[in-house]
Amino acid sequence: MINILGYAKLLPYALLIGGLAYGTHWFIVNQKDDRIQELENQVTQVITRNVALQTTDQIQKETIKSLGNTIDRMQSDVDDLSRKLTNITVERDEYLSIFRRHDLTNLSLAKPGLIERRINKGTRDVFRQLEEDSKELYNENN
Image 1: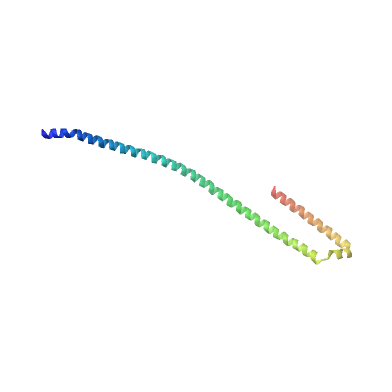
Image 2: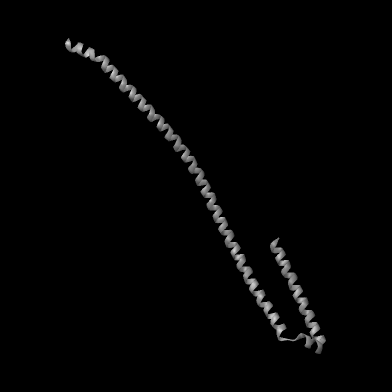
């Protein structure tokens, strides 16, 4: 019986140690559960942000692609206008060359009918061409 009495005396200590161990276990488990819940909330927030960023990224990629297409189109237009300007400049230089090679004042005094008809026809052609070019530009802008 001494052994049973010895164990009976140790029972309150064993219960106390068991209670403390259970309390410590319960406290640690609750801390871990709280931390798990906190991490799950953070994961949910990160997933939400990720979806928003992916959407924004897709929109930005589409915008960049659209801007690239616009730049290509504008570059093509600039190239076309440059070619037209070059052609017009060459044509202008040809006309100016004609005027430089001929002294129209002396020719008009010598043969007024010949020069007057040609000048009037050339002026009429130039004005007609200017009207056509102006209409073309007006139609392109509208």
